[in-house]
Image (tube, rainbow, N blue to C red; front, top):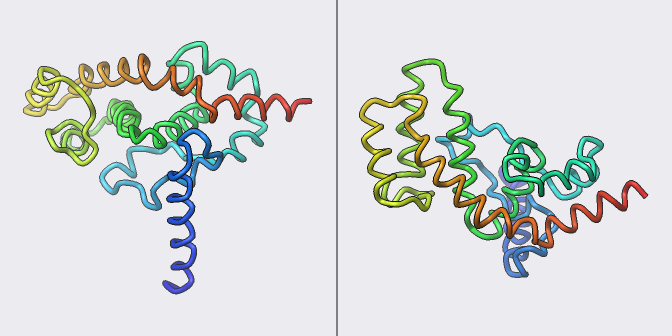
Length: 197
């Protein structure tokens, strides 16, 4: 069984490396640059599936109108599952997907009802994204990081609100405008329009 999986894994790695060696926004297969396995600590918290360009463009559920609406506002993009998938793929090409992953983890965290789970999830998110030298550390200022650290003493559904707000603002002002100008998004729009013709 392992021998059967090995060639596919190697091929996937070659595809990923090949895609990264080209211009970052010229990759049309979004999954080519995605990791094979999701982060263990967050795999149950992040339920958003990643989609290939073909799935995004060929889906009857993604209309040109919907993809065009992503340009209306950042929150419109984040409210659409295909918008999140396309934005995630774009962020991966810029090596900044931790911002979106943190934001999504916070959104999922806010749905937690069990106090015991709330505490453990809060600590996992903090250790994964907020703590200094975290594996996928998000770019937030010292005061926000320290306020969030203090919130970890008694985690609540709002303990990440300040940090999540800063990351949202950063993505909205920085990554989102670049996404809208990216070849990836423009190609998605033009291919969805051609499909209607």
